[in-house]
Amino acid sequence: MRTMSTKIIQGWLPLIPPLLLAACSSNGPNRSNSTGTAHAESELRRLVVDGQELHSSLITWTVDSAAALGSTLAFRENPRLSADPEFVEVIARGSSQGRLDREGIREALYALYVGEGQVGVYGLRAASLADADCREGQLRGIWAHSASVGRSRVHREGTILVVVWHHGVSPECWEAVNTEVVKRLNTPE
Image (tube, rainbow, N blue to C red; front, side):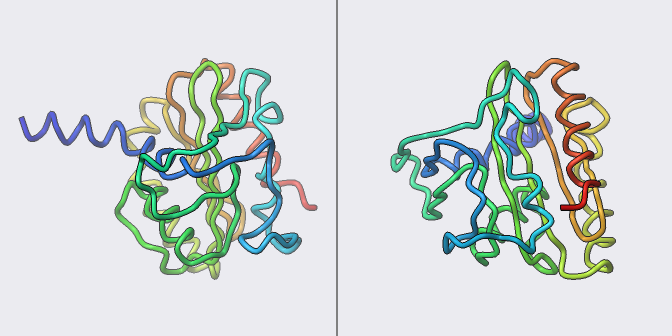
């Protein structure tokens, strides 16, 4: 019975951070950090996009309020890119299914898109290439099962690590999303 419960919980772990995003409200992608100023230096900024930019079936998830969920971390926009330590901690933990903290991570991105299903994006900017090497290995190990069944992928470019996961999108949508993420990671600003 314990194994069954563990599998059920692991299956829902990628969906937990969207619950934390519940205090989010946005009419589109917000290209700012937690203080509202432009985030020009961030390579993660390339991934702050509207759902339609990833695939025509996706829209950027918005919620007016979800105080009932009891989130103590106020997410003001979706996607959200920030170097705020509390936000980075939550996203670092979410991107590792609760196993890793924010050590070695300077900045984080979270985005959730809905349509025919859900697509989530965790982005991390490591403090150094060595930190990125270490975290990449850890993330690939953590997400190996989900990747093997086609529900997640880990991408990397330099110090940027991106975990993309989905729940219920078509293979065509899934491939398009990952192709666009790779393209954006490899395109200099």
